[in-house]
Length: 308
Image (cartoon, rainbow, N blue to C red):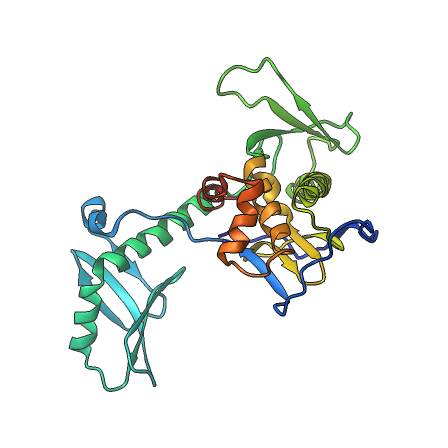
């Protein structure tokens, strides 16, 4: 599945070590060791309309050695010659990279780029917008900052009277005003690192509690059992399941709404029935999350806060 912005240093948190109940069905006997949900790319606009959406712009790869104008947009790209049969395009965070056979002429490369201009410009725009959204999601760690928790904004309040961190809810909050406040037991003079560490620790504790509860719920519905549940800080995966019954869930899921979390939990537990993405696997997911396609969209649309 996407993504999320860069996670903190990896840390594992064992949620429980107890062996599964004897009356649980064992994990499927499969050859594949692990199945995972990866962070997906952000959804983009249709290629056909990209030229009309953009004013003339320049996209510059830091290692660019060639450039071309595509629909009035200047694209400077990194060209590498390789032992291959076809011309390959890749749009990443740095921009456009092109791998081409040694025998292909520059004119042929330009022709291939113009043929794929709509796709290239759409992907370049998606990357630029994603970087802008991630920059806007960077958290300013101070009193009054806001972070998402279970899909809702939470205002951080520095409150030396609080012990640890305490979540308060205002049921009578005005429309458009966050109803949740997290009172963190720190003085107003606390550093940004202290505030970040305190809030992150609280979020991870909530993730541990909620993920454990949802795993138990869906394991019972699916008739499977798992040997271990742990939190991860993976940068490229929302979750994973192993053939030995181990489940790992990215703690950053705690920022997202419960329907999205439930989809990821059900997805991973379903792998204990089918360690693949076959139609049978999706039927298992659908049996407990009938609208999983819609919920999966939350993983594409949400941008996680950047903690650095």
